[in-house]
Image 1 (cartoon, rainbow, N blue to C red):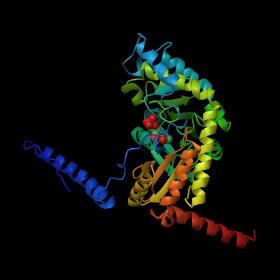
Image 2 (image 1 turned 180 degrees about the vertical axis):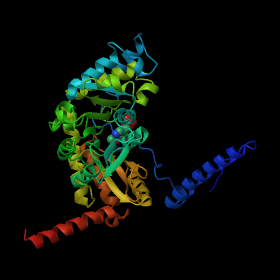
Image 3 (image 1 turned 30 degrees about the vertical axis):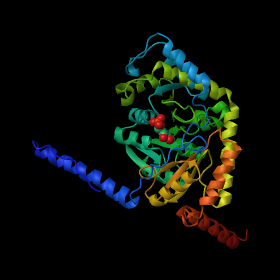
Image 4 (image 1 turned 135 degrees about the vertical axis):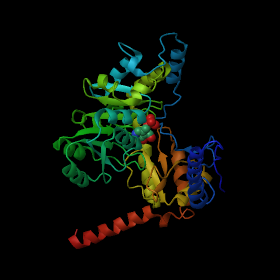
Length: 423
Ligand SMILES: Cc1ncc(COP(=O)(O)O)c(C=O)c1O
């Protein structure tokens, strides 16, 4: 199926730009949708029902719609008061936003906090504020797209290093000099955990600043949920922590945690902070109540971890390669996009719903279905999930997936190494 975007008859240049867009849209429809996905859509399948095992949402602590959070929003909406519908740059003095920012800073042990509209805006704004032309920014290849976008929009130099490969980072740092090092604490596609201790130590020894994106660990890890950096006792060693509050906080906001005196400067240099409106009172009320619950409910963190351990172990026993995951994010990597489409459909057939990740979120041949494990999953849900994954294993060709073979080859190499070294 092809289509074209019709040109306006009165403009030649309009005609060619519209034609160009039409060609690009057709390329997507033909190359990916028609050819690669064989006319089906990789993402668009069935909708989950009441009994489905839902692993789509990043509401890890199962906190969305908590009655206390709902009530806090209702109260804020009903209260008459100063509601600022404008950029946060105009805020000053004691405001609900500034008091919530102080709470976030205190909780995480960082000096200051800045609330932004999203995790994306937080990362883009931060990189615009601290980097720019001529500044080398070192970034793990699996780091979130918003960090890459920040580097690009700041006009800084991006130097990627292989995922979690500290030796490769060292070579990059030696080649290009001191700059900014960016990592995710927990990587969002496969749930791998950053080698934070080694990377931070190396970055500091080379005179670099460090940004850790804690989107997938704030709330789920650390003392009372204060994050992985806090859990590892590294708070004083990092310059900036960012986070999306659309994961464990189940809201729509982002966070930058920063050194003393930085926030005043940020509000005048980060374009998303200056040119986009700030959070609304009921959003702040929801986040403040969510923070209370996250600090209070250690049992939610324990439940996520227990559930994730059960799922990871169960999938590994079935032969799935889930070795990369060390967290509540667990991915089934089918590889080719059509194989991932088949996997999604087969899972849906078992009433199991995860999220498809494909290019540009993953490399082209490493697409996957991501499962976000949450605190509310029951033992029955996990049994249903594992049973479903067992039933579909052959049907989806799991034994031939590149990820399965990688694990087998890795295991063989280890046996070979052991026999050579006599271990
Ligand atoms: C690691 C990481 N950083 C940042 C973001 C962006 O967050 P938000 O959805 O709040 O814009 C995400 C969301 O997918 C993420 O996974």
